[in-house]
Image (cartoon, rainbow over all chains, first blue to last red; front, side, top):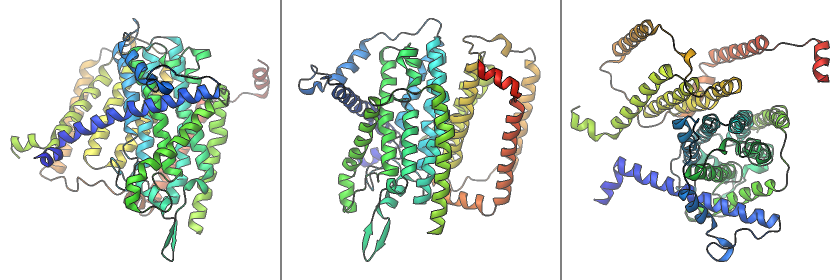
Length: 340
Length: 183
């Protein structure tokens, strides 16, 4: 009876949607809390303190409740439906990226043959949401923020995609599970299997990927779209209540998912040396989360280390440096792959 | 297939939803009174056609639609419209009086296309749906059997790109260049 119910398409759909709807707030809250505490540490402050007792761990829950109580304001001149749907689109693309990321050899929502391609395609959807938000708010700051975001996302999508090509050549597959397996089994000799995360041979690709994903996330040093000293809050300026919360959650969820993709592509994903497949199925998620944690920490660390770039510097970094570097990387990888 | 069978297949429902969404947004692309809304409905139309391709197990085509058309072409559309003028509300210039000829043309086009596809595929069952097409096969076909047309097309696109840049860009004379540097 229960099995029959579970194999029903609609029941499965509802269950999957519920899981997706749960993952984002949880991930968003954990990353958001880490951001608050680490920022405080780096500025010699205490950070959240009161909510929930020790470490103020319930701060983000309290914030969430607060956002839901706030009035959902729509500016009088705004284009209402577009204004209302923009944050939903941004959040949906943040959820959809997580589909092909493997947590273990068998723990994956859907092992897509085109995993890498899917991730890049879906992540480009959020650009539309950002442009919708910027335009429909009927606010100059919002529009400029939205345009800056779009210009930035167009420029950095290219190096992001090109940086991944090197990994795809190395692994010979676009499936994220296949890429992790390729890193787990670099070469076998006398019954020993040696693994190697691709970051060791694709360091250039890794560096380009991290820089480009910082720009895609619009985080410091690439936070011009929401530069508060120039544009109030960019395309988010007019938003309040739970729609603001959506953008907020999407930012943290995107930090998590792009780190998860970087960890899967370059750091070996769920794989760790010396563990059998069964052990990887149990500990895989923890290993992956540890790697994601390192990358998220790096992003937060950057925030308090670097100043913001200028808009023209941003464009020249993308077109004059990152694109040629990643093209050279693809060429070198291809030549070495064919020679080897 | 009777009605009961039809209802019990989720794929039929998903198809109906996607087809309706695609038709609705297609109509709204042309009837919208605001150019940005029209572009956004185009996103809807493309996204639902990507969904239709997914139903046919053509993952690669579906994702290419999303990445290239939604992620790049429409974003550039929107970017271009917003950076020049970003009209909120109705845009009178978008409408015109020749609705009847336009409607007749589209009905004829629809009839021709439906007639052609029914004539070509009527009575044939869609096979091979369920497993996604192996991307490896696609790659081998493109870079093996069809490598010459593939290269010709990419060469043509490159030429078009360079042509576009040459047409759009006005090269400054050295004197103008200096004047520009000075400001």
